[in-house]
Length: 385
Ligand code: PLP
Image (cartoon, rainbow, N blue to C red; front, side, top):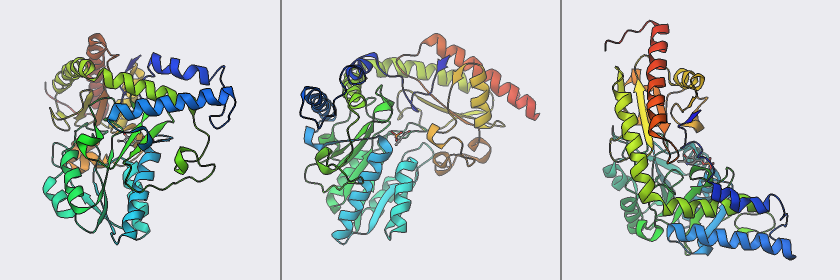
């Protein structure tokens, strides 16, 4: 099996699993309990909080553990919107290419009376800064712009958005779910107020994540109960997954320089091979994207059929993003980028990790070629080589 769906969920790092194991086996303590087992669990959470904070240049008390990226995005946007409304600000600015965790939270806030504005993207998948400058103003409660896109991997100019927000007094949130552990992130350098992270994208365990929230930025809970996470996220902590996340983030951030070079080499090899297939096109920028992301469309082919055909050949891939799969509609990201009609439905996302090898890349490229040819034959589409 060749796993090229690392942006959907990456393999758990052995060190992360090792950090989690005691809390799945011998230590069953609830971190709120004051006995030895409870204290051991609480200590693991303190350590994980320090590791997560260090990895993004934050202070430990600015890290709030959650169940993952979706919850962090919801928590951030709702808190920023509500505190903005109290200050007479009613606008939320986001982009047309965000993950549904942000887009659907914005929709829910719109139904509660907020005005939501969407920044568009260009054909390379970069957001339109002129529109951002127009839309972020003194009436803006919050702006949310992702650090890196989950479908086409484009890395967005979040430092510039943070600066626009700072000038207008708006809260700036960035969904860094695809970026954390893959590109360097420093909240001071970026100048963001809130930042979402999800453990399963960098070798942690699914079901854990965190929200960074700057000390002086008002935050409020989505979930009420026993007051864990400084009252901001009640519920008994997932100690094993939190411990694993701290370790995984520390390790992946430490390996960014080395892994990026290796992964980029594999990505470029794969991209070159796929673009040799007639009727193909690269979606998103050739250079300003995450090192592991390849997103290619093939004319005359449905993305979902391609993914199923690849699955039969032992290759795990995605059409669009995994979170959007099962959707009948073509990707909202590719649509926002103005990808032409016949290429909209035939998109394939392959995401490479440091665990992949050049042999796997070559075999996967061959599998894509064969699958595309078969699917085109079935539909009677002819592509001259
Ligand atoms: N934001 C982005 C950019 C993502 O890619 C994802 C998951 O694919 C999420 C948010 C949701 O994260 P989670 O799966 O941890 O809820």
